[in-house]
Amino acid sequence: MRIHVVGLGAVGSFVAFHLRRTLHPKHTVFALHHKFSAPTISKEHPIVIESEGVVHSQSGVEHLAFTLSPQRARPDLNPRLDPLRQPHTDLRVALDCRNEPHELHRIYGAIESLVVTTKAHAVPRVIAALSGHLSRNSTIVLLHNGMGMYEKLVEEFFPDPYDRPNFVLATNTHGLWRKDVLHVVHSGVGEIQLGIVPDPHGRDYEAAVRGTGNVPSWKPLSLDDIASISDEHAQSVSPRYLSLRNTISALTGARALGATWRPYDDVQTAMRRKLVVNCFVNPLSALLQCKNGDLLSSNHSRWILDHLCKEAEHVFRAQLAAEVKEMQKAYEEMSEEKAAVGPPRPQPYPRALTSLSLMREVERVVDLTRENYSSMYWDVKLGKPTEIKYLNGYLRKLGLKYSVRTGVNDILFGLTQMRTAIPFVGKPS
Image 1 (tube, one colour):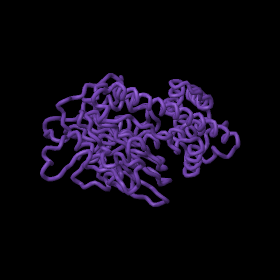
Image 2 (image 1 turned 45 degrees about the vertical axis):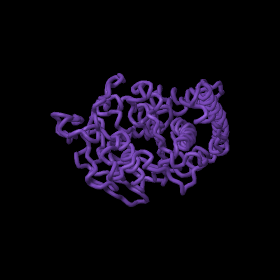
Image 3 (image 1 turned 180 degrees about the vertical axis):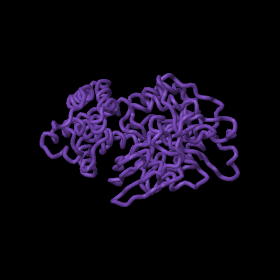
Image 4 (image 1 turned 90 degrees about the horizontal axis):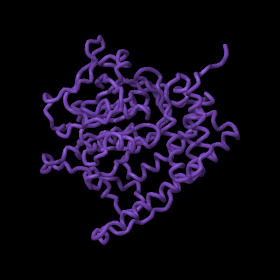
């Protein structure tokens, strides 16, 4: 297989490192860099991971450069593009920087699997830039901070569900920070949870655990529910599902990533928990210009945390209740299918999304990353765009949609927007 990782900061470098270390050499791992960062990277540049003072280096990742699209125009996917079976001589993917001393290798063929680890605000431009090399048979893994990006991409780029690539939503809890170009410090062991967006064509990826209630740790999902690759059927496997199976298999097979494939609803819950963590840690550490560990050293910050978590719980309760009503409405509009499908059964509100549980999770992450500076800290310090619209901004939009007040969250959102509009001035010399 050919797997591409775009966004070679801390998370992207971490993923590319372990994919290359784990996958058989016949599989290719490409690192996609914006053309402005490519001059600092040679075509054989190794990726370095540092953990507890021990440095590990991994070569063999192929580095490529690409240009971001100046506009977010809706891309036209090539319906005939087959990322798995198209002869390599049929399509040249020109992702190299021509006529420059740092010209990088070209690749041939379409993008089979794309892992996106850029900042949230850059994701639409990345997808637009690479859209000519994507098809309905491609698989896109969204591994970034914040929520709401999948919905944005669907609305802006992939409105037709039957021509839409596979999407995998992911959340990461590893403590990682970038020390230098392609040099990452792994400061805290976490996990990556992968959730496959339901198939518009009707394939049930979670058939192995359907109807079992809470999925026990010993009852895993089955790759064969994505695509069966037994010898007698291998030639007839749809390239769409083979791409998805290969992607999940590659990520979960890289043990050091701590990646697990979980039911989609479980991953949505994990993403909501991480959203609240980021809604507290990122804006406050950026505004105060402090390490994560300093954030809970005051009763004032704990008051903010308490109110933020209560607001988040109210929003999530309203959102989940609305989803149940939508399912009930869809069921009522069905006719002869009703007897076979049965009415939707409301699920109890997840305990993991109560305000107390959310507070405990924030405290855990703050302690785990107490010596780290958040990504938004660096964005503000260096005058770069932040992900605030996909963090507190997303929670704010949900509050407006479901008529839930989110006052503390909105103040953090507004203050961060103000902070980024004013040039940062450090301590006086």
